Image (tube, rainbow, N blue to C red; front, side, top):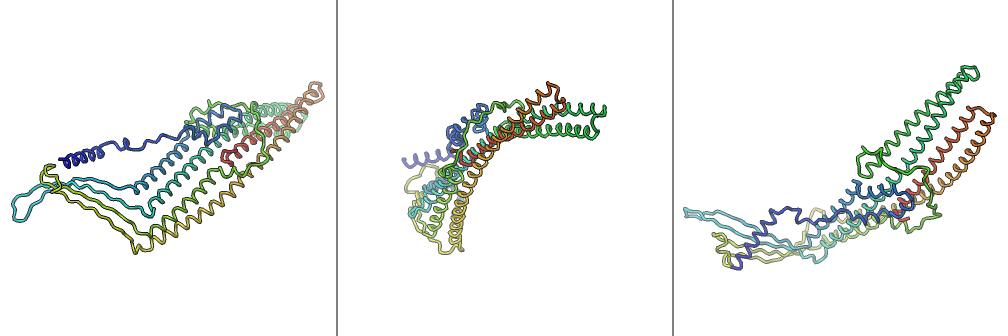
Length: 450
């Protein structure tokens, strides 16, 4: 009777597994932990830029960017692949029901038979082959986690660069509107002077060309801003339909409060996600070589089977009607067409590739950090020189205004001098924003650990 109860429970459990929703048994891992992702991007560095609007965009990108969600899902995909591999270290147990209808010779009637087999198999991992393969997947999880971190750093860097370029274009468009007004006035004055015979027609035509070019330039600036607003919308995981309502800091409120570092510690390289990934890949390929060597060793398996057969369902399920088998064996393939030798050579080849990639990643990391630091230093010097030149132009324009008030120069001379100041201010705007973008480039090159 105990055997009947056990078999009945097994059948009920099997039916339950067969009909229960698969997701109820799946490991429900939550989406990427917001605290971990915030640590990925080093939010304190962004707070040092003293722009709460930008911080809001950064946090929104961390939470809503679709590429970042995909990178987190890939980490979970790798984790589940590891679980599949780890299952090979576990015993396999199954149960079945085999109904049959049979007729014996010299008999005119047929009888029914039901057989309930229960089987189990297990590969003894004496040499650790399956364990090594699971360890290899552990390394893949670490690599995918570093790839996820790299994705977060890349996306938030793109958010920052896009944001500052939009701020720059806001200012450039305002300055260009001033230039258009001035060139319109210059053209009108020169047209009037031409009609009075004071200047040539060629000068008037050139003034008109300059006015038309100024209008064409502002169209190009507006187009660039539209494209960047579209990009920002995608980066923060939104539809671009509300892009014109996106807030941003005014250019004139930007404050340069991050100093330019003299150098960057070599320890920064060791924190870059691509460097860590290449280092972990070296460890993984080393494990894969070890596993490939162990494939030449025999495998040991244990097999167990018990089957109850009866012509009456669950009525005569006892040891009398049972067939039980328990055995084990060793298997050593003698010829596989060279597959195992080729696999070992393949894994060694992958290891050599990983070594070269590791070396390359290191020197590329040094180059990117040096390039970013060099750009930051030199562009900062350029900005300071442009600022000095702008202040000179501003002072000169102040003297020109005094001369105009005193009647020493004409309104045309004043307008031309004002345009020189506006053009210099456009260059100053470019150089100042370039400083912020270079700071972000150094942040990205250092793996957000600067």
